[in-house]
Image (cartoon, rainbow, N blue to C red; front, top):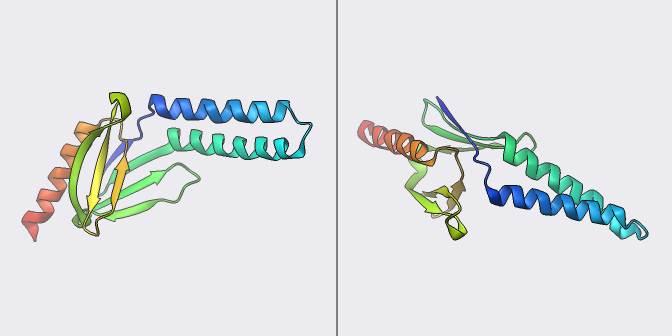
Length: 135
């Protein structure tokens, strides 16, 4: 079993700051009840973004599963290694970093941001080739 942590990028930090600033402005101008409600909604969104940035992890298990945990609040997702068709390393906008794009057999795509993308890709490719050799 191998676990990779989520990489906190400048995009994550920027989103957290924008949501927090929006919540602050909405609660500062609390003359309207809609602004107060919007402020509390933005606080919840900010807390979810922080939770996702800090507590997300990707675990490759020994029994051929990729478990994606998106924070303590989010639901974990489990994918069989045999369902993965292709694995690519893609750049973010303006080449601010890289993420791994997993294309599944049912033509859906999942993007994940492990801290060490190259090591994650090498490990998952090794597990995929090991599963292909067994079958």
